[in-house]
Image (cartoon, rainbow, N blue to C red; front, side):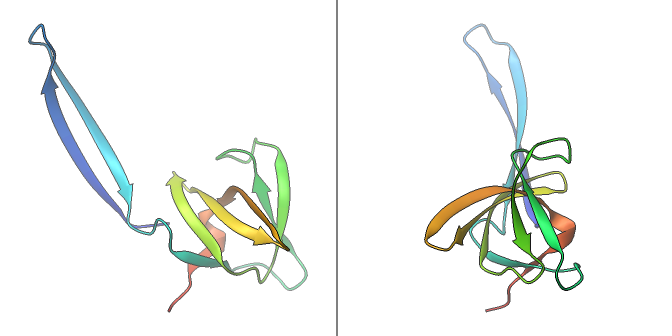
Length: 102
């Protein structure tokens, strides 16, 4: 899973009511990852949303590389990648991602 910075804030509306909020920023956004933890010949499901309940829209090979992480929602990460000449994107489970070292 990616490292995150958490921040919180409080704000007042025009009526003087206080609202609290927070944000999480993925430090790994835009960094490259590769698939790990699958036996040779197996594939990693790429899903339409951040859960195993979403439709499988693509499959990545056990040794896929150059996956650009955009953000994570719990253990699921949204990644962009090229398949041939086509750019595509979807959600994969973070247990199968490892940051590519420069």
